[in-house]
Length: 466
Ligand SMILES: Nc1ncnc2c1ncn2[C@@H]1O[C@H](COP(=O)(O)OP(=O)(O)OP(=O)(O)O)[C@@H](O)[C@H]1O
Image (cartoon, rainbow, N blue to C red; front, side):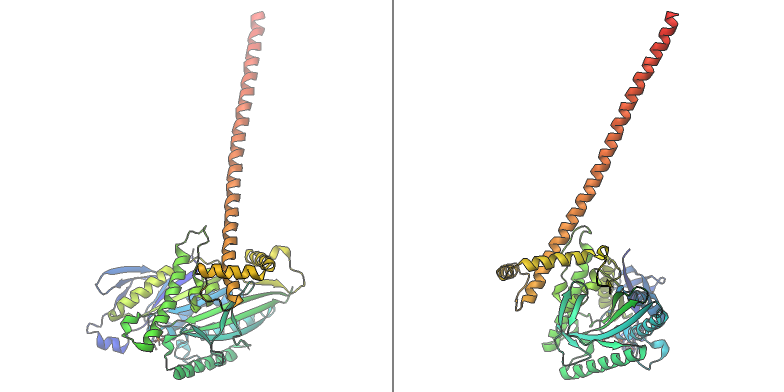
């Protein structure tokens, strides 16, 4: 079963949609909590089945309880989690994520983010006898392929790095320690206010950027001091509408193209993850956009994910809604394998059996790098440029990363070959055993036959001699 929960959420018709659409047309007809019939522009009907469908009257609490609460609980137990809202502009992404406001809003209307924060600290409080927790919060915006720190606007171009044990990291990003829900919500409000300031400074709209809320939840067991870390990322994506539909030009068109590029990159990553053979290590193009790079851990491996496909119910938006739903259907096939992300003892010596495949791979890589001379790296750099793996290697870091990517893929593929061979050996051993048993059985049968023939002739001879 897939570890990605995909839901559709239809907001109520907006007053504009009611006004514009003379028939008050709605393109969705609910069947049950998981399925609905969708009617496109040409009045063709499609039946969609997802993990859950939230219709216009569904409560914010229901959305939280179904898709975010389990992921939040796992993140507190060190299993990485990601919650994404996707859809065209004005489809209800921010309403689902934040609600009408982060603080002081109607309890019923509170969105996923404040509910996740409340739930997380509640769970931490209830586990305080088992483990000591520290929570850190970061908040970034991706606009025109630049990652901006929303808790410190002076950091306008955060670099994304990868670390063997911690996975994807935002280098130098502000991480504020938060000890309770009130403190966390205050920082989130600061981040959102900074986002608005940036919007005015850059003359852009928040719907043209992706916003990510990142929680790092670290715990140390009271009993044996073992430490674990879970990452929880909530992402409010930029509007997914097609550039040509907006009639944009100039800078707005550039923005739309960049958003489409990053959302296509997200779609391509999803395609690569869902279409490849499960036994083959196929290339996943995480590096094609900042968004997919930040979500790399969340999409491919050690993580649980929930995708809320936010949709307008209006027939006037049917084509955008259909593409949002198709995106959701593709995401449904991602196979993630959640597991506790980092288990390290604070004792000086690691237990040998705790080394995971990733860590082993990392260790092999490190050894290989130690043996490489500067000339080797230079030569690799040239090969990577020729092969189009990297385009402008300004730094050794980029070469290192591309090199690690290639070597890591080779190691994965070799590991898989070894696993396949081990399987073949087991099969041959079983076959061999079967043949031996059969041969032994025949031999026994032969012996028994001879013995019974001897007994009957001896028995017969007794009577003839008598
Ligand atoms: N489930 C809902 N119930 C009631 N109102 C909703 C719901 N979802 C969205 N809305 C309302 O619809 C409007 C658009 O929602 P929202 O701003 O969340 O869209 P969005 O997808 O985030 O848009 P953008 O990409 O432009 O930021 C808002 O006025 C919001 O209050």
